[in-house]
Length: 195
Picture 1 (tube, rainbow, N blue to C red):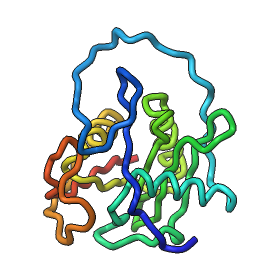
Picture 2: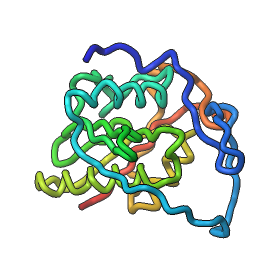
Picture 3: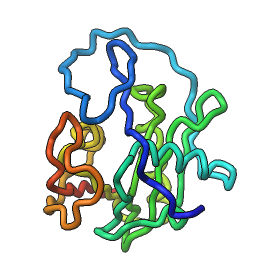
Picture 4: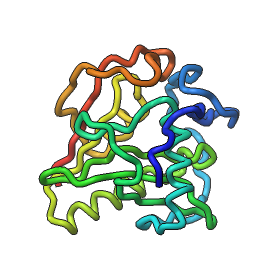
């Protein structure tokens, strides 16, 4: 796979109330309780990506990370060099997690869920499989880097036992300068979970 393009496509989120799609800059937070009805969803299968899955998985990641390069340990990560997990629901790729090994751990470089499957557990299943993979390889931790504007990711990872272990200024501002809800993208936040 070539290094083409984690750019040129709008990142999309799906509104939890009306179902419409929104770009990151147009999204807003909303406080809700657990009053919403639970919907029975089809099972999610998470597995290592086959050669045939890689294109669909990278297309999904490219849409999510529009205008941004994938960074791992402050270095640009070439898409073709990354290992991939994919989530499959109803016979299609609904999520992808790109990772690579670092020292004693697994570094999640990028994770995305198809907007139609957001809030259906796909991300949680991908993350759980990444943690299982790290344990099988006797690695001590899973780490992930996000940006200060990515409130959804900070919420997602912290609820699953990840702790902020470093905040560093963005050295090389690449891609957009404003992210979720127009928040200026200024810092990288490193989160880590000890296994």
